[in-house]
Image 1 (cartoon, rainbow, N blue to C red):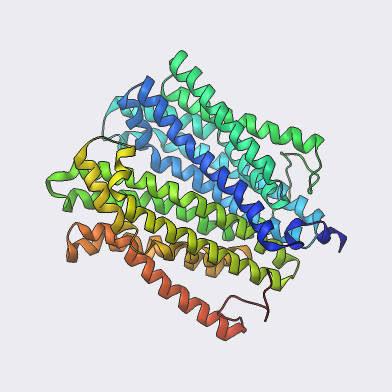
Image 2 (cartoon, rainbow, N blue to C red):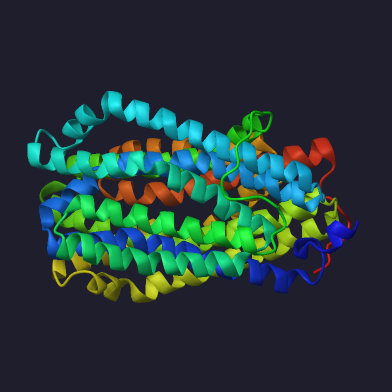
Length: 462
């Protein structure tokens, strides 16, 4: 009982705890999102457009790295939050060790697969260009063979989040970005290592950030008494990690597939403005990603609170966490949708001076964000099921939007609406997901007695 009392997530006023949890995570999300922007800036300024193009062509394979990392860390964090919420520290330590072991195993398999097929794959995406293929292969080789640092770092980052060490997470993330700037400048601008310098800069910054966490765990006071690297011969947590982490992992893969589908559709339906429309789509993607990162941070904070309180069987606090998350997500998305409508004519000017592209951005964005106010609440419902360990419902709601709705709609709506069908695919998918979510919640409420399919207790106090 005393262990639970010392857990900040299961005691005290929920609203302050929620904001204290969410704020550092959102900051970390935005900071981590700056890595690709920094790489693009240094490559474009000091190496040239061809280097930037080579790195861009490797985006689908880079997303595979992120997807595999998320496959482990996302599922692990759900398990870990519930163990800590229940005060089971010995099992929490074992869960950490098994996550690190799984991370290294997946990383080793990834290296073997890259050795077997990495070269022909980069030649394929480079469309036969030897220079682009060589640069892309160099970039990916470094990232793949230094991927253990990324995988172990992801597990440790989620461990700190579950422990409530959010200030340390924010500090380490900010320091990591600062190091990335310094290393990129040294490796790219001064040592002229090109794309290799970019990869080395990112990997080295992440490695040093991991070492900082190691020092803190050695000298500081943490909930789980363990070092950053701890292996285990046991693997009974692995199936749960993979089943709970699969929705998050597949969502990253879905991002890559969606981009491919959009570009393919623009080639068919875009007419003579292909270059302009693709450039505008690239800008809108950056804007939408920037908008999405705080929402992702909010969902991770929500998952941490729900996981801890569900583990502690504090159902009233779990229900109150749902209320807070749904309200914040709806308000955030509605405010951003209104902001996009108001600022649509000026957003493109932040990136380019070409009036045609700016006008195209102003045309596309309002269509893409037509029902964006639904995106946040729907995401929180999916996150809730992941947090309580309901992998089936989390997978259904987390993956349906991209794989069942968005991808088919991108390819079929233009048959009915022409080119604008590409941009209306997202809003249409959101409405379909709303319907699916309502069905899932209705069935859960009817079969198990949960109010609105979500709430366990009769009262939810904040």
